[in-house]
Length: 405
Image: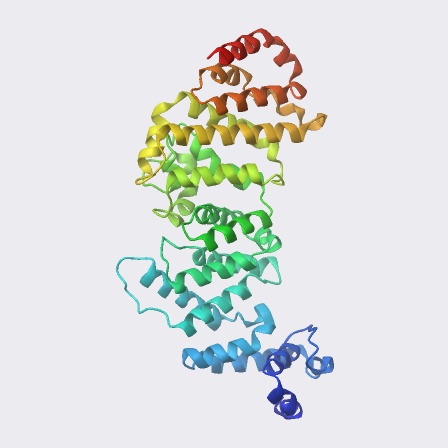
């Protein structure tokens, strides 16, 4: 290997990127670099490459942070092969130091140096480029931890989070365990309303990029509409009594505990449902969404609890309620329109609560909410025409009253 480096000495001295490309070609099974000869990567068999990589990693791990960063930067082209047990331990330690110093009140660990932050970002980027489902599952815990902000604005907190948001792909996300996918989605919803504009925009881009399955969405939606949990707050990690069937969610709740405003979380969740038209089997969400809509119309105590749990919220209860109702109505209408004439999906028609829409289209104090309800009723003609026709008199009466008021 040293002989090969000496052969490339002039190139290495003339271009700072050549040495990194050399190691990428040498240690990776495939390389498309134009800076070094492709034949370099074929000089050694896989076993020898592994030995070279392990030697360099073992040496690097014993060096100070700045030197460690230089070596890891040179060989990061090897991808997930870098993630040996020693490197994973380093990544875990850096994330733990980040959590202890920046995300807790105790400042139990010293702050991370810029070199350590750069190492952390480099290793997290490698985690987002796993080569197999097994690797993606193993790296999931690191990705979840990096998405924690807890309102911190320090570089050591923001940069690792941005690294994940920029690099997380739909394929890697889909390869992770369902529990990890749920945790990541929950964290993205929290970041979706983050005061930091860069984080907020990147989290929105990430949500649009990844593929969501309705089962993940339902796991977050079910506790909100479940009468056994009673309030939005209990669905977002507050230490309230949980029903037995929700005990499996404890890990997810604890992972986001205390980091989100319930109103902002619910608002972000519904905005994502409206925005993500490619959610797999989205029609299965019709029933739970109507349950939530009924809660907002008929359970004033539920809305007050949600608002009270969001200390410092600038929105009034009425404004928040109107926003939630309008977003729900728009989402349901969008699902309804997407079904169109697709007979295969019309079996969800019985889940559309037409009576609820008729009763509250007129009673709502918000004109926009009433109009959205009437618009959804109109869209339902294609899904449940007989049911709409049977209520034509009630609908026209309601529309007449709404016009007069």
